[in-house]
Length: 213
Image (cartoon, rainbow, N blue to C red):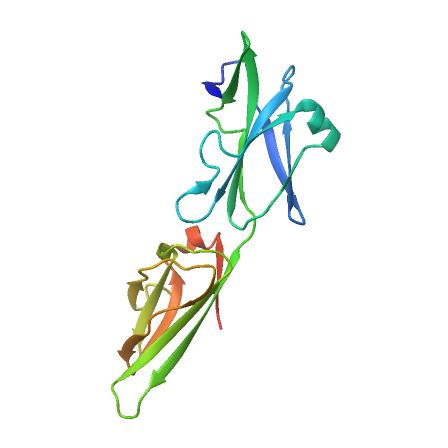
C-alpha cells in the first residue's frame, strides 16, 4: 500500500478518541465529507524497544464508513498489557490507485496504556555467625517479560535505600521472563541493605507496578 502526505483541504482524520470497557477499546473519530473507508493500524509496545505490528503494513485493517456507523465506532479487543498505539489512515483513490494519507499533525494517531503489569519482588538474607558478609537472594515474579534496563538494585550501608540515588546502583545483566525469576545470589556486607527500583520511574512506571513483598 502506498502512502502520501496530506494536502491542504484534503481528507484528514480529526477528533480521534478512545474508550476502554472490560478488555475492549472503542475508537471514534470525525470522518471528512466524501471519505468512505480508512485503514486502522495497531502497534503494541512490549517494553523492549520494539512494537508488535510496528511496520507500516503489519496490523492494518480496512474499515468502512458503513461499518463505523453500524458499530458506533471501531471496537477492538485488547489482548496485552502495555502501551498501545492506533493510527487511522484515510484511504484515497486516484486513477484507480489506492493510497493511505499520512498526517504530519498526527491527529489521526492515539496512544494510551492498557494497564500496568505487576512486578513482585522479594529479598531473602542469609548470614553466618561471626562472618562479615551475608548472602542476598532476589526473586522477581513478573506478569510479562521485562527488559533488564527497566530495573536496578541499590545497596546502602546501615539502612534500606529509599530511591535509586540513595546508595550504590547496580544494573541487571539479563532480561526478566514472565513468571518467576530467581536471580543469582549476591554477597554484601553484613550491614548492607538492598532494594529494587526502576532505572527511569517516569518511563517504566507507566508500564509496570513494582511491589516489594
